[in-house]
Length: 134
Image 1 (cartoon, rainbow, N blue to C red):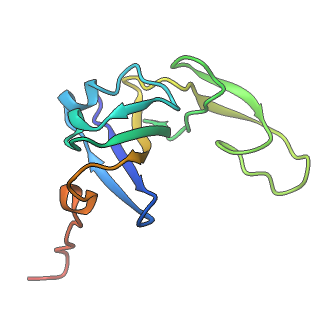
Image 2: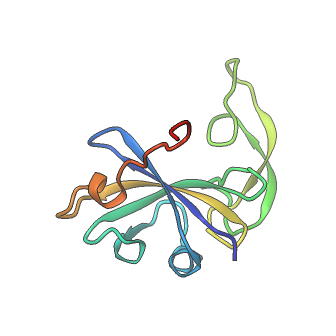
Image 3: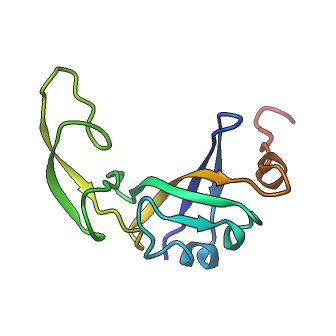
């Protein structure tokens, strides 16, 4: 199984936490789709509620909420996610991944909907950069 990386956005502080999940925790996300609200307990965030807002596969193609399933498909896009137009009315055919998390998913974006008792910063914390010291 592929290791899934979570990017958890905290709307209160404006910070985003980058968390790598193991196989067991990743299995709780397989089969979930964009827009679902899940409990944070299996991910180590007790009494938190998280909403899946997007993601990307192992090749870097973004997940799109309008594409059902886990497949990769070309769609014509006129706005994000997957395409950011530079001119008014611009459209482009882009390859995107479906809206369901699968084994091919590498990154999952989430936003905190409901907070728990322990602050998010204590649970996930700031990782210290040890490069250059020593």
